[in-house]
Length: 75
Image 1 (cartoon, rainbow, N blue to C red):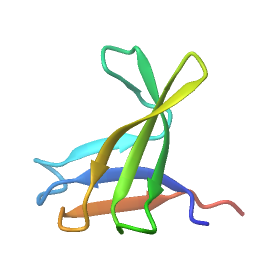
Image 2: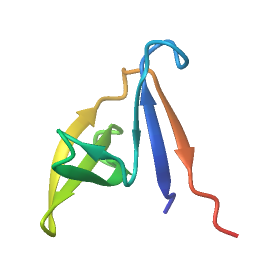
Image 3: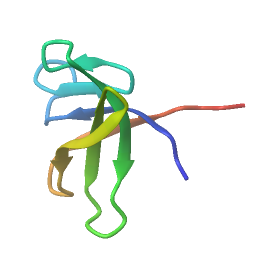
Image 4: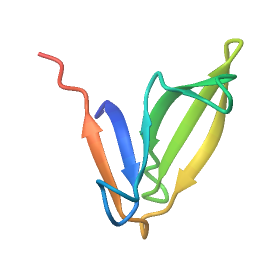
């Protein structure tokens, strides 16, 4: 299983893309990004957030969206 650390969504990585990183606070710092996972069935990517030990699916990006993924490298 690949450990996704960061996802960037958008056609222009440097200026127009949205960036989400595991551990990042979102929604007025009320939630934290818990994980970013590849959905094997749809091929899309889901962003899961956490608040008070509950985890929710927050965003889903389909395979037609331009994305860039960064993985954790654990040696």
